[in-house]
Length: 246
Image 1 (tube, rainbow, N blue to C red):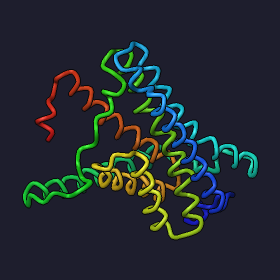
Image 2: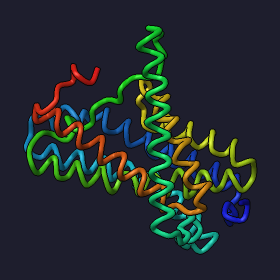
Image 3: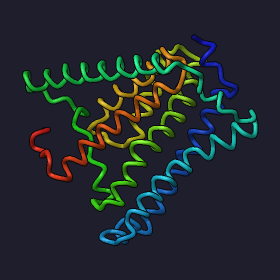
Image 4: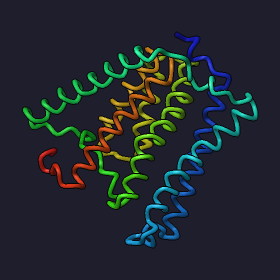
């Protein structure tokens, strides 16, 4: 197991990359707020390009320190991020196992909340993201590409391929999984839904640990986001109502 988590970079490299990425992202957010870019774009036809640019910039800023440091010190290779070969059948089994586990945990917690009327802070339905992009056809197509394909791939490379494997190289996989799942939940900045995102992070981590490959995590993440995207799309098109999901 430990062999899969062997990476060339150290925990100090990890710290430098995380601090640098956080500083770059926060600087970008500060500049966007300072120049009131969001308000300037509201109602404009080019809003979708601004939103797309924001998402691209966010990940560029997050990945720049990672790419520069690992490329300059360790001759960056794709294998360093856990892209190991895995059979299609094993990937399918892992993804199905992960999704059924996620549904089971969600069902148990939701049932507990409904029948006991106990309110769990941080366990709410995630905020809708499609309204940020807009409701036009082109906007929805762009949103689909970002949410279903680009976002999951980049997030898995960073959180599982880099963060989880780096931590797993220096500590127990259980502790590494918890820490990386917390970071995964925190970076979404949806504090009302931080618990389900954290649980999701733990399950995706388990897929990587069990499969010893990043591919099951990427496939799972894409499918999960595709389902969420489809539900939001149905809400926008008034096929289903938000009240029925509450």
